[in-house]
Amino acid sequence: MESKSPLPQHLSRDINQLGLALRDCARQLRYAARNVPGPLRSDRPVAPLASSATPLKPSPHLSLESVAHLADGLIETAESFAGHAVPTLQDHWKSPVLLEPLTTYLEMASGPAKTLRKFSMSYYAAAKRMIMQSGATDVLIFEHRICTTLERMGAALSAPQAARAMSSRSALCLACAQLVLSLLDTQPIRSTRFEVLPDVNAPWWLVTEPNAYVFLMLSLVSLAKDTCTSGIPTEPDAAVRFFSDVVGARETAFKQALKGPEPLHALSHEIEYAIAHLC
Amino acid sequence: MSQPICSIEGQEIATWKRVQKLTLCRQLLQRCCDEYRERHALPVEIDDRNFTTAFFAWIDVVERSADYRRQNEQDYFQFVFGVLLRDLLREKAIHLKKDASTQLRPSPGNIADWWPTGYVLTHFCIGTLKATLREQCAVEVQASDAISHPAVWQSFRENMIEEPGLAIAFFDKFMGLEPNWREPTQINNRPAAARRPAKIQ
Image (cartoon, rainbow over all chains, first blue to last red; front, top):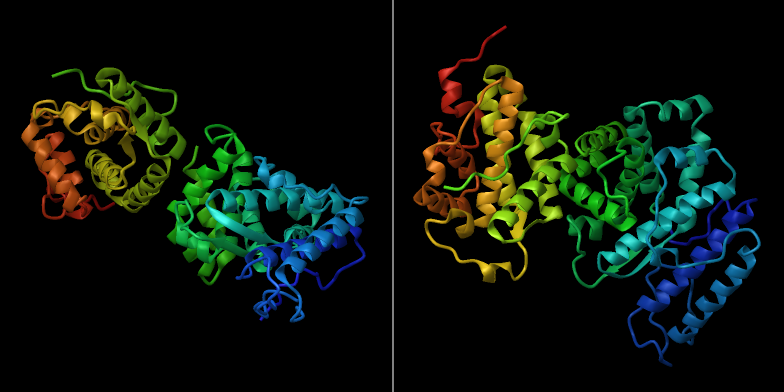
C-alpha cells in the first residue's frame, strides 16, 4: 500500500518543492495530533497510528501533547526555512478563494516552480475551504502533490499541444478532464474527518471519494471562467456551492465516466455535457 | 379567475434554448416566484441544490426523447414540459420561505394559496410550453378549463405524492390533451404518438 508520507521521492533540486514537502509534513503531524483518539494531555503512551497513516514511529513515551508541540515546532521551522523562497504559511482557506480560469493554470503549467505554486496554493486552499465548509472537523491535504500534478501536465504538453488545449470548448474540457484525472492519480486529499454527513448534494461521494468530488468541482469552477462568461455566481464561495450542486446532480454520470474503460474521453464528454447546459 | 402568472414574452434568446441552460432556466423560474409573491404576498424561493438536481434529471429526458421530436414536435414539447413539472415537484425545487406558511389562508377555491409550490411550478411549465410552441412551432395553445377546477388540483396533489410521474398526465389534462394515466412517463405510449405514426424517411 502506498505510504502517506508527504516526502516526495524525487525531492529534488527545487527549493520550492522542499518547502512544500516540509509544510505538508508539518500538516500531517498536526492532523495526527488532532485526530488520534485519546485525551490530548495524557502521560499514557500513544496508541500506535495506523501504519499507512504516518511515516513516524512514535516511541511509547511520546505523548500526544509532545507530538503537537513537535508539529508546531516543525511548522515554524518549515515556515522560516521556506520563507525565503515562498510566501509564508498562511491559512488561506479561511477567506474565500478565488480560482483563476483554467487557461491561466494551463499556461502556468509550463512556467517556473514559483508560478506552479500559485496553482497549488489556490487549489489547496479552495479544497480545504470547501471541505471544512461542508461540515468537516478536519482535513489533511498534501499541497506538494497538487503542485506536482500541474508540473507533470506541463512536462507532458508540448507548446502546440498546450495551444490546442485552449483553442476550443471541447479541447478545454479535455484538458480539464486530464487535470482532474492527474489529481486523482496523486490523491492530494489524504484524509477527511466528518462527524456528521457533509452538507453537499452528494454527501456520500464526498465522504468516500473526496479527491474525485472536490477536484472535479474545483476544475469545473476554473473551466467555467473560460467557457461561461455570464450567469455563474462570481463570488468564490457561491461559485463553489453552485458547482458542488452540479457535480452532485451528475454524480452517477461522473462516476461512470471515471470508472469506465476510457476515463479521459468519458470524463471530458461528461464535463462538456454539464458545461454546455449551464449558461 | 385572476390572470395566470409566468407569461413569457419573446426574448432575444429562444425560450427553448433558455430553459435548457441551468442559469437561464433558473432566472425564468425566479421571475415566476417573484410574480407569485407580488400577487399573493407569499414568498416562494428556489432551493438551488434541488433545482439543479431536477434540472439535470430533466435534461437527460430531453436528450433521450429527442427522436420523438421528429415524429410529433408539438407533443414532444408537451411531454418534456410535463416531465419538467414532474422533476421540479419531485425534487421540491421551490418552497415557501420559512414562517410564510403561517400566513397561508388556504381555501378550497383558492388554488394559488392552497398549494403554492404546485401552482407556481405548473404555471411555470405552462408559460414555458406556450412560449416554446409559439417560437418553435408557430402554434398558440391555451390551458383548458381543468386548470381552474379545485377538484382536479386536489387529485393532482394527492396522486403526485405516491406517483410523481402522474404530474405528466395532469399536465396533459391542464393543456386539454388526453392523458395516459397508466404509463405517463412512456413517451412512445402517448395517445398523440399512437395517432400520428412515425414518418419513415
